[in-house]
Amino acid sequence: PIGSFSVDKLVTGEALDDFTTGPFTLNVDCAYNGARLAGFPVEFVLGSDENDTVEVPVGTTCTVVETDAGGATTVIYEPAGEGGGVAVVAATGEYEGAVTVTNDFSTGALVIVKEVIGAGVPSFSGGPFEFDVTCSYGDLTDVHVATVPLAGSADGSPVQSDPVTGIPVGAECTVTETDSAGADFTPLPVTVTITAGEDSTPIEVDFLNPFS
Image (cartoon, rainbow, N blue to C red; front, side, top):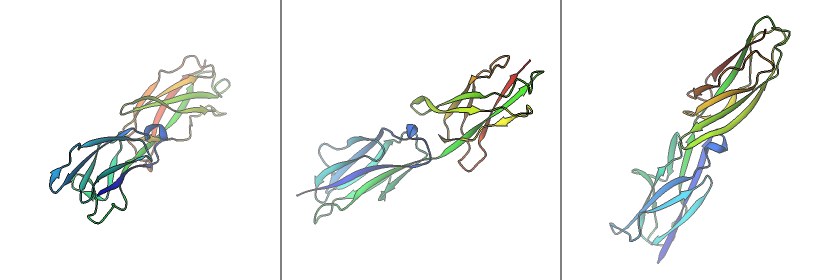
C-alpha cells in the first residue's frame, strides 16, 4: 500500500514580504527497509506558506533537508531528525501530519538624520526633504523598501526620521536623497549594512545639506 505526507514551508519574523517569499529549495530522500527508494532524492521548490505531497510505500522513512533557505537566519524542522526533518509513513497506514520547515528572518532598522548648515539656515532649510531606501539581500538586489519624507526643523537643528523597519539583518541598504529642498548641493547616496536586531538601536544614516 501507498502512504503519503506533506512538506510544508512556513516563514516567521518581521522582515518585509519582498525578502521572505522564496523560492526555497528542499531535498527529500526516502528509504524502505534500509535501501533508498527508486527516484529519490527529489527536489521541491516552494514559496512561503506553500506545500507539496510525497507518496511512498507504507513503512518508508523520509528525510527533508532545506538546501536553499533564501537567506533565512534560522531554519527549524518539525519533527526534527538528524540533519533535517523526518517523516515515517507508518506500517499501518498514512502518515498523519507533515514535515514543517520554518524559516525565521531576523530584522533590523535604520533612521535618516538630516543636518543643515550655512547662512540660509533656518530661513530656507525647512524642507521637506525626501529619501529612497533600497536594499540588497542574498540573491535579491535593489529592493525598494521605503520612500521617506522628512520635514526640516523651524530652528535649523538636526531632525531624524521614523525607523525604517522590516529589513533583514545582513542586508546592504542604500539611502538616496531624491529631494534636497533647494540645498546648494545634494549629498551622495549612503550605503550601510543592517546589523542591529529589531530591539536594538537603529543604524543612523547621516545627510548634510548646505544652504547659502
